[in-house]
Image 1 (cartoon, rainbow, N blue to C red):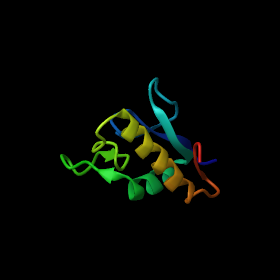
Image 2 (image 1 turned 135 degrees about the vertical axis):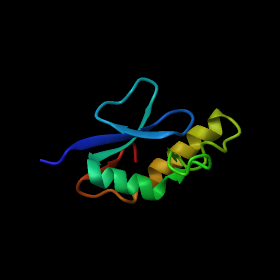
Image 3 (image 1 turned 120 degrees about the horizontal axis):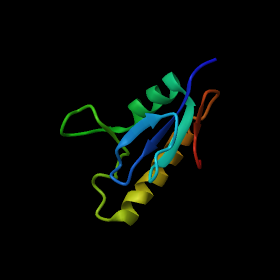
Image 4 (image 1 turned 90 degrees about the vertical axis):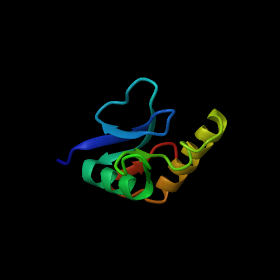
Length: 92
């Protein structure tokens, strides 16, 4: 059986992965670990500071929380286009 994980983000747009959803985090997608990591890595934005840290596109640039949450919603909709066996965008 393949390991299942959840991709999630925080208000800053920083994306992380885990078996549980931390308090205050927003779930983005879940499924088989390799598939979730691969899809998120390809669709997320890399940090301009370290070129490694993943962010929800549009959140770091958002002028306010409303724009930030709108960017998260658009990103989840975008992830929904990749729904398949082993990957599911949450809320899409």
